Each structure stands twice: as structure tokens, then as C-alpha cells.
Length: 461
Image (cartoon, rainbow, N blue to C red; front, side):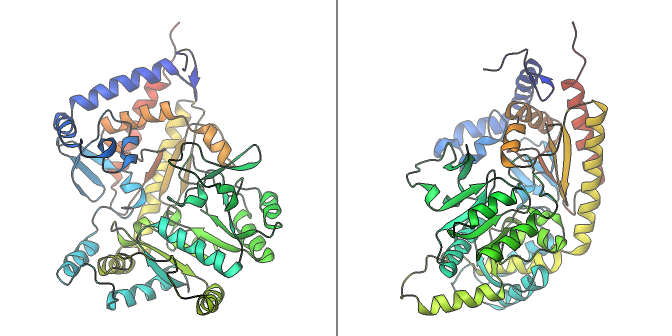
């Protein structure tokens, strides 16, 4: 138990607890309908929510949404919030972009799923190549699925069993990546539900930004693929050091492994994702969440050489289910939404607007932190901004875990909600969409300043 005299990231623990209690009471006071509805209608769900991670929001009970529009959200009590979470990237271009909404309405009249392609699907293939490069594409429903299928291909064409991942990484619900580096060993992450398999048999985990460790792992001849985010994102954000990502690509090629980039979060980096904006050429490209404007969809693409190798493997393998694909993947609703997103929503002008807004937010938060002399810093990857309760930039997942301050961050998040600003619940991530307005950004900066003024007020004797 934390002592009230302890300081967490420069803030007295007692002050954090006082804020937590006050903001929880304020949240409940302003949301009587949500509280009553949650009490009456959640018994049918395991844990009281339709998806267990919804309990991770720092609120005393779930907030129920009435509607969203643009970069705003309204709950059933009529409280309006500026939304900087945006579905944790799923609605990065704003809620229900008009071209996507039109495409969904039109396709709903023609059918939702039928296990056959259509003209939208053909158009999507061309658009994906134009936007992300000349890959050979497949459509899945979630990035978790896309990563699973990509790993099957990597193991098939290399004949090797293991995937190399980085401690602190995030690739959805893929079993192989649920590992961390502990005392130099690859071990399962604590807290995994029902875990029985030894994950060290299928995965090797090393520290981010450590090319020497990557090379040592590849020298074993067991690594089929390096799977990485360009930036560690589902934690206190960790940027790649200069040359690290290209070093991964070079090492993978030298040792006969594949280089897989999961851009599900770093699509915020710019048009075409981090790979495009930084000149990277992965063997396999994975993207989920925002590619269909909020409709569940993901894509994975193989380079020419990997596609040829997989074609030869596929022609020679025994008949039977490949383990790749799910019934609802590549359904016409996904394809309609993806076509609209790629053609009309995920555009250069949209990214330019997002960049300007995110730069304004980054600068404003940094000024607040400096004004209060807080031992924190701010990072930005394109439209993605994060404040980190640690004085210096982080180099690896272990440092990121140490910088994460759950009690402090939860109190700040709750206080922001009560001031009309919603950010991601799991860490301190904020997204700026093309429809986020300057006044929304400025309100977030002002709310952050108000909270920091309380947290870093001079201590009385």
C-alpha cells in the first residue's frame, strides 16, 4: 500500500487519492441515468460489461454513450465530451465519417455478408496498393487475426517455429506475443487467463532498441519473423532510436527471417503509415482499426517475394483447412467502408490537418508541464500525442513499465472526463482527428493545466 507521504512522479500520493475520490463523486453526481442503467442492465454480462476491458476505464461505473459525432461524444445524461480517445484509433478520422456512413447505408440495402467478392473488394485491393505499397493483400476482421495469419505465412515459408517480439509490445490478442523479457528470459506475461502452453517455445522476446539482442536471437536459426510496431504504443510510448527499424529489416534479410510491421496504432504517423513516411519496406504489412472508418476490419499484405514463396508452399501442402481466414472476413460491408475510407477519408489533406492539431496539442501540454516544473514529458507520432509521467524519453518496454503510474494516471483521466475531455483509458494517449476543432484542443490543454495546478501546488508545512 502506498504511503500518503510517498510521491508518485513528483505528486504526493495523498493528493492523488484526494483527487480520485472527489472526481469519482463528481462523475456519479453528474451521471444518474448512467448509474441507474448500469445497475439495472449489466447483470447479463460477465463482469457487468460487454467486453471485459471496458472495466479499465477510471470511472466508478460505466459511462453509457448516447451518440457520437465528429470528435465529440454525448452520454445518456447529456454530458458532452471532446473525444481524444476516438475508439483507441478505431475512429481516428472522426466518428462516422460521412463517406463511410453513406457507403454503409448503400451496401446495407444490397446485403451484409455472402462470402463472395464484389466491385468494392476489387477497388479496395488497388487502393491499398496505392496507399501502402505494392503488397499482395488479404482482408481480416481484426488486427489480431491479421497478425495470426501473417505469422502462419512466416512460419510456412521459413520452416521456422518462433516469432521475435519486443517486451512491452502490442499486437492484439495473439497468443505468441503475450510474453515479456524477465531476467533475460522469455516468459508469459503475468495475468494471462487460462494460459497452459509454454510461450517460450514459439516466441523469443528481447528489448526494444537492442539490435545486438535481435542479432543474437536470429543467429539461433529459429526465428521465422520479427513482428514489431514501429513505436511501442500500448504503454508509455517508446520511440525507435535512429537506425533501429532499418536495422531490423537488414538483420531479418541477413538471417532469413521476415520483417513484419504492425501499423495498427502508428497509422497516425502520416499518410501511408510509419513505413511510408520513414521509407521502410517490410516483408509483411499489417493494419487494423481505422482502415474501414470504424467498421471492424483489418488488412495484411505480403511483398512480391514472400507472396511467391507462399504460393509455392500453398501449392505443395496437403489439402485441408489452412487456419487462415474467418467467415465474416472480407464481407461486403467491410469492403464498402474501406473503399470509402481509402478514397475519401484517409487523405493527404486530412493528415495535414491532424498534424497541425496534434502539434498544437503537443506544444500546449509541454508548456503546461514546463510551467509546473513537473518531471514529465510529451511525445508525438503524427496525430498521436502522449504525456508521460517520467522526466526523460524511454528506450525499452521495461523502462516504459516503470514510467507507468496507474494511480496517478487514473486520477488525471477521471478529472479530464469531468472537465469534458476523454482520452484513452489504458495510458495517456490522445488522438487528433481531421474533424477535431482548435477549441477542443485548447479546452484539453486548459483542463490539463487546471489538473496540474492542483497536483503540483506548493506543499504547506
